[in-house]
Length: 262
Image (cartoon, rainbow, N blue to C red; front, top):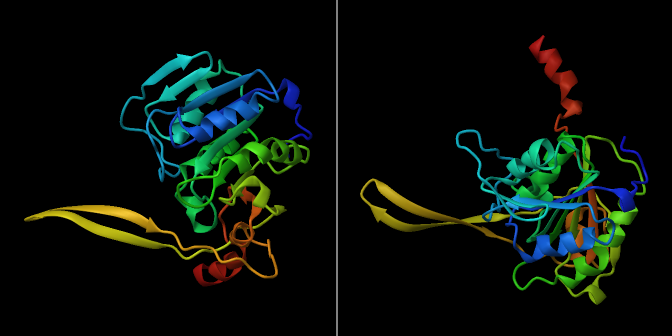
């Protein structure tokens, strides 16, 4: 278990994302982190790494560029950024807390497996650092005033309780003005049907060029204002706060597998 409450006033906070080091979401998150402590470090990817998942760069060197005090851009993935930050760039002292985001676009339901934003928090968790990921649902234009108003309060609340060391916190905001947000709720991961659009851009003999894209269905509000899952919460303009575990084992199937394998 992580010790709680975290001493945020004396914390070392690492801020990262998957969109790039000079994007509105990470700049907002850094600003909020500085409300708690002066010991804030920003280590993010040089380019947009949306959809990078938990990938890591093995087959090429990684260029790191320092563009300000405690500010670094990495020519790699979000996982690369967290590894370099915790193992090298922060001088060997682990952060007290890792904040990833704020991502423009949803990171809940099945989408968490693709998310570089969440994967940065996964890597922090693997390294023993309490980690929180933040995202805003929907499409452009994004309403940043919701995260601006509520992120600091969420950080205070979730770091006031202990959670298991193999768990991270995944926060998603409905893409509505702050005054339209109904509340916040602890949720579990839901299911949301996505569709992928594949367009053939060019065909030249055996060579073809394709473009992949997501078709995101609109979330319909529930008259009961349910918030059991992250999908339901977002559909009802409720901030979803979902604890995610690293372990993916289906324990219910082990007994049957042992029987047929033995």
